[in-house]
Image (cartoon, rainbow, N blue to C red; front, side, top):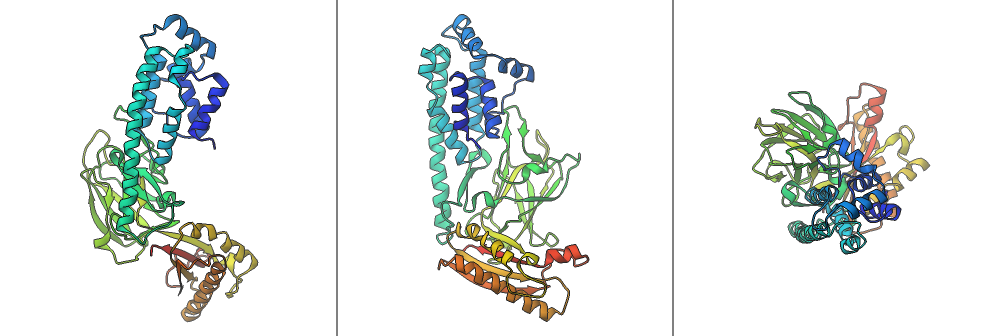
Length: 434
């Protein structure tokens, strides 16, 4: 997919470099992003502007716009850039905005009468302010990375996986596993008015504010509302410093946070409030314990929009979790890998090696058919077969390997149907921080 700058260049090639709201919205349609979908304009105005041709825009500027006065389009353009600047989600968006500003030659556009001199001057000043802010944010990004690595000198997954996002009030949040760090599925929710925007809480942050006390792409818990999410391709684990970050918009409202291994037994970590969205679970868990569920409960504090406005939930201290179906890997009751099983395992190599180093734990699991002793022995043998196959493609000595056979003792679901039994017959691969 084209990035923001490439999309902008495409439109320049099509219609010249004059900047209109219609162009910016078309950029969003190309990139699939919301960088410029933050304008508080009515649809009639947008439609009217989008119908203007290049010649009509230039003619309007040349004939009716005094050089010392901006057009309505230009004022909307300034607001668009300002709001894009205030709704950045990550360093990639920061870089794209920087590139867009660098590729916009205001002096040339003014000389060609494509924009007014007043707009060129005012937007130029705004660009300078934005660039200074972006430079400051880049320093914050570097500091966040350095702080994490200082706290966790042995926890390094490599530059390919680490990524920095911007949380509440623009705080730089470094996640060593990047995109993989975020919650993957909504398990349940309760809202006093039955409002359901919970899908917006899954994956990377993408919410934004229009500047009129309006929040888009986020789920408001509602007074006393609850939200339960699950990490499926990773797990929450304790590291030095904060372990969990809740991306919210606006003031962090008092919310109770709980974590769970299985979604049944919960540990109350306490209250998130006072503008601090990061949580350290150190005092509540044992080393290397993995947690897959997070539950948030609003503590009934009124605001413009009742309930915490949740955009995303990320495990800073995160372990990678990969799941393989035993039916693909092995024949019934066997521990020798099938050809399809070897292919499935080798497809996971990239997901593991991107982390550079870590503790790799291979866990074998079965359903409850057969004796407990037989299932435990079979599950361990299967774990060893998977481990041996992976080591052929990952000779890196920075990884430490361990095989475990749990048999039928850790089912994902009840063994009360053939479908559920198939889900419980699996091999899980966990990559934990060193």
